[in-house]
Picture 1 (cartoon, helix red, strand yellow):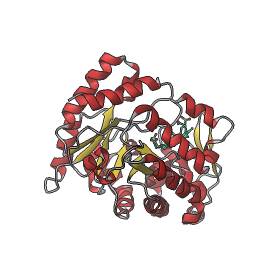
Picture 2 (cartoon, protein in one colour):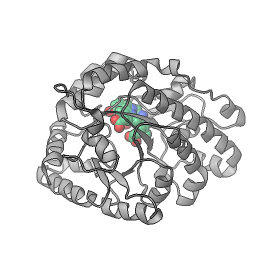
Picture 3 (cartoon, helix red, strand yellow):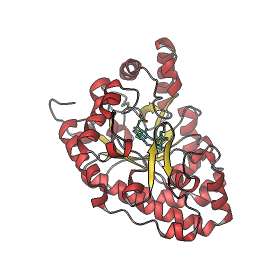
Picture 4 (cartoon, protein in one colour):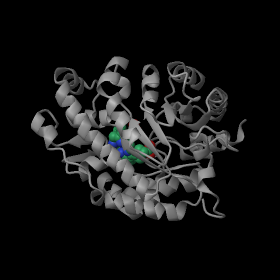
Length: 350
Ligand code: CP3
């Protein structure tokens, strides 16, 4: 991560994001910074998650831990998708073992009207953390991120994590005007949070629409796509990655949102994903994809892991560029040494 400083725009991750074929397949893992690492668990002892996210030194150290350990080609800023919501004044907390919990779930017009805009000074610690990180990272690009309007809305409307998203879908269909007003406000916060990170110096951004796969393509297009499109189109100067889980049916619609890279979970082989993305928009250049190793494969033993990595790299050849990643985040019980070995395999195999 240190040593001679090259032109960062030539970093393998950024070359692949532009649709090129760099000298080695770039790899990073969603949730690479976090509970799989003993040094992370030690550092976080006694500090609440949202306090950790607002401590620039701690964010910097946690973000660097997997870069030191695994030789990954990207660093993902340690934070959470609810950080900008909390910063903008929404009363919520992250409860250990549960996830984000909202004090007063959104249900009425006055609840939506009470959601304020985000201002840069409210996320100053994140800006400071990015400054510290860029001084340390050398030629490893820092990836910023935010939650997409739909995934954020699900937490705010349900009041916490949800299996079926029933209140969210009820609001969407039962009161479409209020739904669009809510997503409009969330898109404003998300877009501003990403722009703040870009101004502070992140080299790429990822929009996490983790729960978009709960929607039909029709509903996604009507109730979500315009808002995610607005967010992505407001970002300039860095590659934009658009990610969701369970999105096999949504990939063409997600591409229309305009990101440079589309994330693919483990359910769809990359060559099939590329075909779907391309058929939907034959006038556009060949797509760039990110993914798509099943996080559970990190528990399957090294021979099985290597076979999967080889297959995914082969199928990824169908794309203009391929950023190797998991199909979703690192599971908390993953052996960190296996993550290191997986990175070696991605770099080594042809
Ligand atoms: O390793 C860890 O998970 C510990 C730190 C932590 C994060 N978020 C970091 C994070 C914790 C405890 C949370 C709370 C939280 N927030 C959870 C986990 C609940 C649990 O205990 O299992 C969840 C699901 C959220 C909401 C959330 N945050 C979503 C849906 C996403 C998008 C990514 C995804 O997993 O679908 C996030 C982003 C997030 N939270 C990241 C990190 C490090 C994203 C950046 C990355 O990929 O590293």
